[in-house]
Image (tube, rainbow, N blue to C red; front, side, top):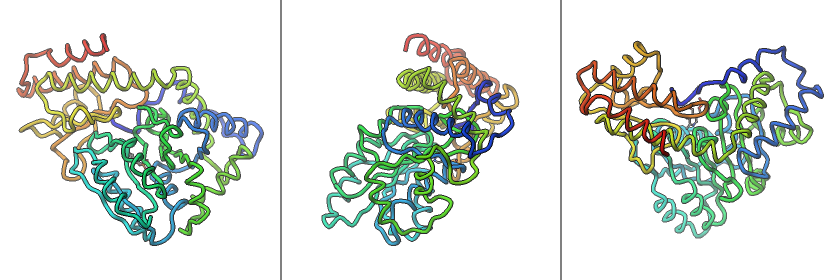
Length: 377
Ligand SMILES: Cc1ncc(COP(=O)(O)O)c(C=O)c1O
C-alpha cells in the first residue's frame, strides 16, 4: 500500500504476457486509437492526450519544455518533494523561477498566487507550475482555485502534476481550463511503471509554437503528428499499451464518479481509523490527498512501525522522505484498492501499536471506526 507502483489487477498483468506486436502494425494502431479516446475520457477533455514511454517525470519535463522558452518567468508551487522537483526541472532549463512555498504538510495558498499574478500587469509570467496531490506529504493542493487565478491573469498557462490525483479525484480538464496535465502509469492507472501522459490544451499548443527550449525525444509535436495517425514517434512500451487498454476499460466500466467516491471513502475510512486509534494525521483532514494518507506518530519512530507491519503482515507502507524520514509513514490508497485493503491496513496498524505498547486508544477503536465509515459512507 505505497502510493506507486500501485497494485496491478491480474487481468491487466496477464494482458502483458503476450508477444509484442509491431508498433507500426494495424493491430497496434487500433490500440493507440482506442487508448487515446479512453485517455481523453479520463482527463475529461477534448484536448490531445499524448503517451510517452518514460516515467511521470518525463511527462512533467515534457510539459515544461514544450510550452516555455529560455528565461521565461514562471511560478512554481513547492510544498513537498514533488514541488521541489518542479523547481529543479524549471531551473535546469534556465527558466526564471519564482517559488511559492508552504511547509511540508501544509497546502499552497491560492491567495499568494493571486497576489503575484495580479502584480504582473505587463504579463511577464508565462506559467504557473504545481503539484496537485503532493505524494510526499499526503496534501492535495487547491488546483481549481490556483488555476482560477491563472485564468484571471489571462496570459500564463497552468502546468499541473496530477500524477497521484488523476484517476483518484475529479479533474475536469476542459471545465476548469487546465492547460497541461502530467501523469504516470504506475498510479491511478493501475498498470506497471513505464508510460506517462501529457494532456495539452489549445492554449498550451499556442505556447508551444513559441517555445524554444531544447527537445527531441520529448518533443510533443512528434507525438501529436503520430498520434493523429494512431501511432507513436518511437518504439513505445508495447506491452504496457496492452495493459493500458485493459485498465482503462476497467475504469470505464466502473465509471468516473464511482472511482472518485471509492477513493474518497477509502481516504475517509483511513483518516478516521487512524484518529480513532490515537494517532495523528500529518496533513489536516480537509486537505488530505485522496491517494495517500500520511501518519505522524508522536514519540515513536515511524520506521519501526512501518518495518513491523511489513514483517508481520507483509503490507508495505511508504516511509517519510528527506527530513520526514522516521517521523511519518504514508498509506497509499490509490488505484486498485478495495475495502479489504483498508480493513487490513488499519487492523495491522492497530495490532502493531498494541504489540509495541503504544496503542493510545482502547483496542479495536480504529478498525471499528474505519468499518463504520466503509459501511455507511
Ligand atoms: C506527485 C508525483 N509527481 C511525480 C511523480 C513522478 O515520478 P516518476 O518519474 O518516478 O514516475 C511521482 C511519483 O511518485 C509523484 O508521486
